[in-house]
Length: 101
Image (tube, rainbow, N blue to C red; front, side, top):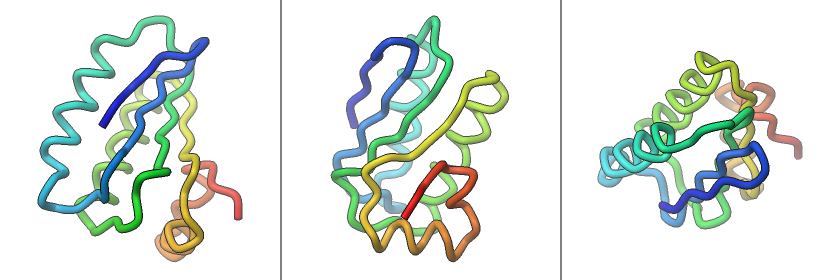
């Protein structure tokens, strides 16, 4: 997982599937990115490198969403594959995540 700051947006780039086997590492890296960020108004999660998300991965994304809302930041997910968009729609997170199909 990488992160970068562009303008006032913190972009977290997920480079592997979000599964229970690696979510703990993702949480640690995301927390580091959030604590290092200043002047941010929006958190964007880039899922270009993600093919599969399990329940723990969904919990991770919901946690990022909730954290961004508590900081009064905007939140969106980008580069989600069609199957991930369908997953977000199925669990009714597509609107909260700013995902458009």
